[in-house]
Length: 495
Image (cartoon, rainbow, N blue to C red; front, side, top):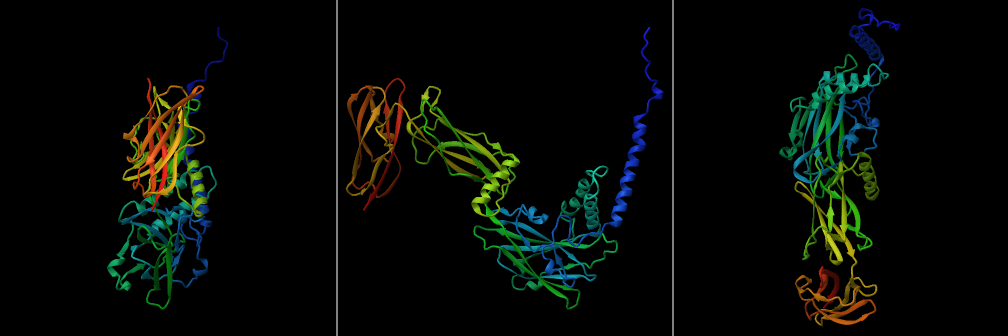
């Protein structure tokens, strides 16, 4: 016989669904009672919408027709005021598509206020519009903001979810607000025609201040005169109660694609160091970068050798938020002002001395990494040296002519060392740059376990006037595995 206690009859167990049926409404009721009690004691401040910090307290006397919570718009991620954190501050150069800056205000008068444009600093200020906020929208914004101050627990998450409603109502549809708009260029001769009307305050319940939004449109050119400014006059009804406000917009024209460096210099490749790695960052101050850019490796302009796969790049790796912040901090320190990084990718670069059984050319190894995102493209030059069984004797790394009279021409003589005696070298005129260079190779007696050549490089008379850029002498070591030797050439021909 089993002496274990019998299972509890099902009818004696608590029905959890029944418990929840009453417990959840009770919890909600307690929360609602607490919230109503809190709201009855809570008084909205005069600092404006949630997240704003009134910056012009000295200018916001009770007699001023409109109280603007801020009159300057600039991006500042450390600002306690939401508008300065939300304003992008960096915009792509586009003389056609306008950008916007918003300035919130309050009419604390019972009479309507007229807001009139007085002047703008330049033609880049293309237009503006004003929208008074409906009373139900401001009431909901304030009450949800107050709910966010309630103790955590029953109301956790409710305030954030509640903000979605008023935010969507304000900005989701073109006709969500009663906008009054003007194109400034159409009234350039008489700005007095650009008038906006703001209803008087009717804040009987203390939760319905008459807020409004002034939106200024501007177009971003190459070299703007900053800050952009717009001057407005305001008047309460038909009274003599008037005021003046100047609005300024500070921003930086930006390219949508940037790189943190123009070139990468890798250590020398050799049989003892067959692989060298580096990286660069491609980023955007204006785009969130939902898709990674494309990366392509090609020869430097004017180069004639095979591209090969001795230098590879990518795939791009998205930067984590902490890495974006660190990059922004570094760029901020360099530019001495806040720098925004909206998105970024790290691009790894690898250089190899050999791919399969094919060695890289000895000497200068140089490739260009092209990074493309849509219509935007940037370049990063990758440079490395390849040390192999043939090299310039001594410390020389290039054929250096220095400065000479171009009309007279010049010649330079160097010694080459081969690590295997008997190595046969030949000049490759088809890949030597520029084509007017001539090369003479004279084999010398071997020295111990090393072979030697004398190399004479000549620039003919009258061929060079100015700086020689991209010059290279190309040789080839004969044998079962042929290998090219690329030796840079520098010179300057004077008159």
